[in-house]
Image 1 (cartoon, rainbow, N blue to C red):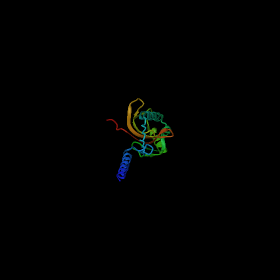
Image 2: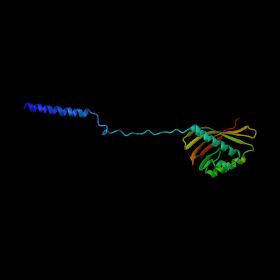
Image 3: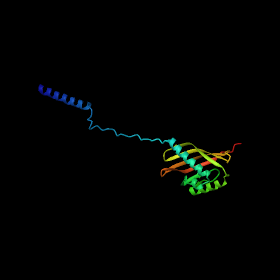
Image 4: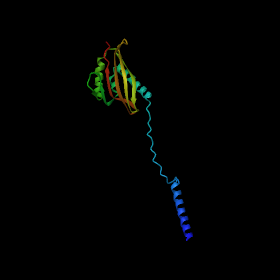
Length: 175
């Protein structure tokens, strides 16, 4: 009987030892469930200095068309669905309405008057850029006759920026 009790105690000890070892051992690498990996979104910052230079080049071309009194060339900078909000005038919707306003404005300019645009700031991404800029108009002698400011929203379509919205106005005359 003593041998049977010793055998039972030995078996009980063996079972407890196996159980204790099983609870303390590391799970097999093959059966371990790994947490799902979540990738952080990759954010690519736009090269705003390059975009600003590209927008300034467009503004230089715009000024050349403006100074040549070429309303067709100016209208080409706008998308067909553009909106323009000029100084002391109702909003113009669509390229045709904007072009008509440009034709009327250019016809009123004095001979020799020129304009230059300066891009001060751009922000956005590669596809949609908001530009803040200034305009300076000079008479034939080079005297500043008017200054103004504008905001233009450019959208990249078919690989090139086109103006989809703008608002501009002139500054009050110096006293």
